[in-house]
Amino acid sequence: MAAPFVPADTTPEAWAKQFELYRRMTPAQKAAGVRAITLAVNTLALAGLRQQFPAASESELGLRLAVRRLGEELVAQAYGWRAPPDDA
Image 1 (cartoon, rainbow, N blue to C red):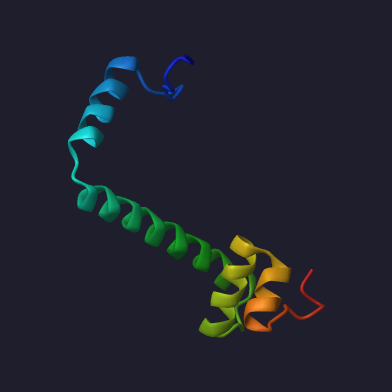
Image 2 (cartoon, rainbow, N blue to C red; image 1 turned 90 degrees about the horizontal axis):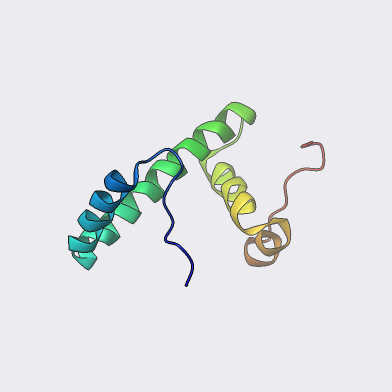
């Protein structure tokens, strides 16, 4: 069996404590944590897209975020949208 993962910047004791805290969490608490992280990542990604495309609407920014996650082809198939060709 492979050795358990321990982050390089964390002591084994600290990681064991963190893992124990995760183990004690209810499924609802774990889901809430994942949701919070996902919302934070979305916020950061959208902030970067706003800087890169300051004239884009919120709808376009959402589509651009989808392209980053799903790829151009899937977004084109699902939403019928492609980024303008001058977006390099």
